[in-house]
Length: 430
Image (cartoon, rainbow, N blue to C red):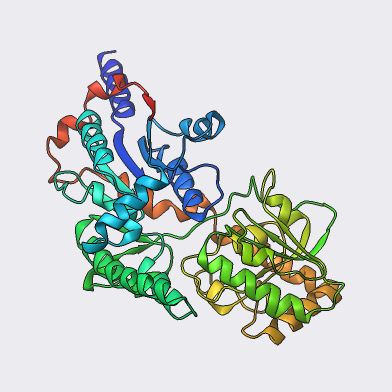
């Protein structure tokens, strides 16, 4: 029986020798009202199956108990640091004469750096994962621990596309400075990290630096337990959905309202759904146009609508709204840019348009031809369920972060020792 005892002891040791992951993100990943939060939470959900996740996040206000608990169940420990807008703006203004991109300085504070340094000493993580370049400043000088980064989007590409729009002079100068600094910063990041990920081939090709080609593609998925077909009363013919404080969404919503919906028959209704709808959009008065910011869950907006309209013109990354619509058997009419990262078959799983008259033609056909409507809805549903399941798309991330320890990690053999089973879950609400 000695062999059985030894086998049981060995199995128990394997079970408790879980890697310790420090996961840094620039926003508390709940509620899921932004694409970055969605991506971070579903990465955490998958990674926690293989290792202990210690979350470090930054927010402008304390998460509510409900928001805290929604994430807490997936983490070994959580540490959220509140940086108010006055502090953020002060740091950003201070750094304007430096070299950091303002969008990075916005999330950095020296006192948070000290907190994270102490956490590193306490947790002794086996690997560090930065969600977005906004958190790189906090770990850029750590070389003895393997580091991973998820760029998600190529932010310099987003700034470049914004520069192509008509902007007020001061805004144009700020974006131009941001574009230059982001390019240098992203190039530096491609040399700092052991593992690197980005959401699409388009974003990867835009990353500066010779090492950018080695960045792995890590797409988004769709939660089919949250987004699924429902037999609900349709109140609207068209839906535009998204966080309405995001520049590409603002531009696309204006285009959808003034260039597309305005050309359709007055009887065609449209819903614009998303938090933070700007005043200039609210001023757009149009027949059968409804703006709504509050929902129990954003899927209600999808359930109430027939067709998703996504005329993104300065889009980067991957449009979650398209995946969500397809998962709910909802036809999508979008721009070539919006479909570029998703690569849905054009004409069968998605309809693509480049001019207002093309959008109008596609929408009118969907509304008048029930058979065509159903065929697009069915093909989109099949496409998304076969290609964008969170568990599947996150496999490259799990494979990289759960791999054997980096040979340069200090005290690698002791970092996963049996002392880890006594590491208590310490939920810090700071």
